[in-house]
Amino acid sequence: DSKVHLRIEAPFLTMAGGGGVNGSSVAEAALEAWVDCQPDGYVMDSEKLPAFLPGVAAKIPSRSLSAVDLGKLFTSARAGEPAIFLQMLRPQDGKVHFLYFWKAFGEAARICGAVTPETDNLSAELEMLRDRVLRLAEEAIASSVSCESGGSSSSSSSGYLVPRPKQVSRGAHTAPKCSGTSFSQQDLATWAFVEELHRAASMSAYPQFWRAAANSLTAQLHRQSLSLEEITAVLLSWLQDATLWEQQQVAASKLIEQVNERQEEKGLPVRLHVYDVSQEESIQKVNRVLAHKYSPLKFGGVFHAGVEVNGLEWSFGFSASETHPGVSCVEPKTHPQHHYRQTVDMGHTQRKPEDIADIVTNMLEEYPGDDYDLLRRNCCHFADDFTRRLGVGGIPGWVIRLARIGAGVDSLLQSAPRGIKQRLGYVDDDDDDDS
Image (cartoon, rainbow, N blue to C red; front, side, top):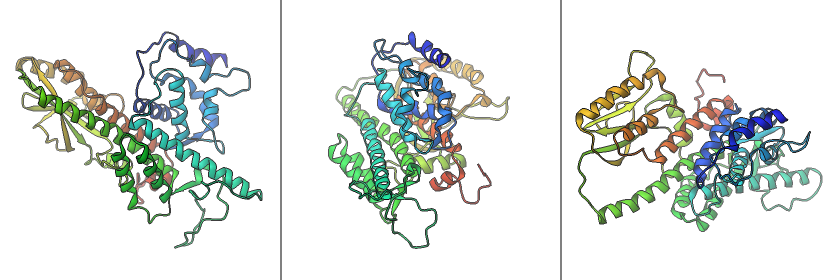
């Protein structure tokens, strides 16, 4: 379609990027693009996707001028032939699963030069685990097709996935002789998933992370299997954990440097206090997915951040009243609605107390409570703006990334069918919501 072709190409003809972005940033962009496609949770109709391709292409991060043109991936080369990106999605039974969308989005970003292939970080290792899960599913389904047609099963993966029966009598644990051929109805044997985590640890630059992940699942070995919805939720939670884990390694290195090269700094200290939003009911449901029992770090799913300067902590939150400010002030580390987790030292500001008061006065006007948006204008945006005005630079990227992932998963889960929400613990059995 020439109209779609022009809509995709034009924004990118003038876009250039210096270097690339890391895998976790691409995963965040993929999650946001998926939510914009209006899916049914972790799946969506493949017939609906072509209409959203321009928006998906627009989410690809900045890229090199010498990179492959996005139009070649997101438009059809010949009439009647689907775009390359659509072919990469591997639809099953007329549905596209988020895991395939995430994989295709990452491959498109690499082809277009938005990110260079990396093998020495946790984000890349997490993608390798995701791809292994997809291969196991594909091999098991291929084996099932052969079995149903009268052939013999030779795939070593055929026992890794357990088809989800429509009805199972209480206490029954025996899988049928031939697995089902529907991708979305496959469950991965819990022991097989733990085995994949040990495999990842043996080849990882961060073996402790994967051992912690495996240990968090070992207690669940009494369960025969995990659904692909549950595995997807686990992988997304580990995407957060991987970001935080890598940040902690960097922070430890910086701490050593600071001890070795301690210097006197003048001015008022500025600190960023990070909370998990564990006391809000709606956020507790998101955290069941992003910070559930399988999470190695159990850091939380959705986050709140406040900036401390001159002895007071300032933050931004939602208010339904147009006359009530969104910016509030509390004693450091004591926000009444959230659970304090950690502090990031931002350095020292050279602003005088009266200058800080002027900055706060201006931001009270610029951040009304009814302007709050969980994804596009939240506490992290306020904290980043405030620290920049104080002259100490923006807040760490990992804090923003964690908040983006949490908000993205919240939007994804809100679109999921009720059955998936219940399976993941996102809604309670007695909730009145029928969506």
